[in-house]
Image: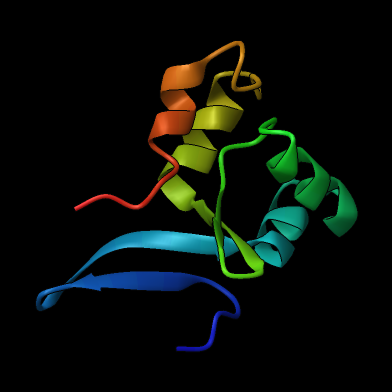
Length: 86
């Protein structure tokens, strides 16, 4: 599977979740790509690393923005939802 652009994760026969790459997030939040990657590494933005790529669950990213962009230390429960689930 190639990771580029917006992705849908397949669970059985239905699409369940939309994932964004660091490039997508940089464009979405109007930030530098290096800043997005830095924030992911420092757990300042909810993300999961898959291989060499950072991926961001779209619904969690929207929730993070709505909450005022808190860090993991400020709102750890939000970051728990960034990882892939069943």
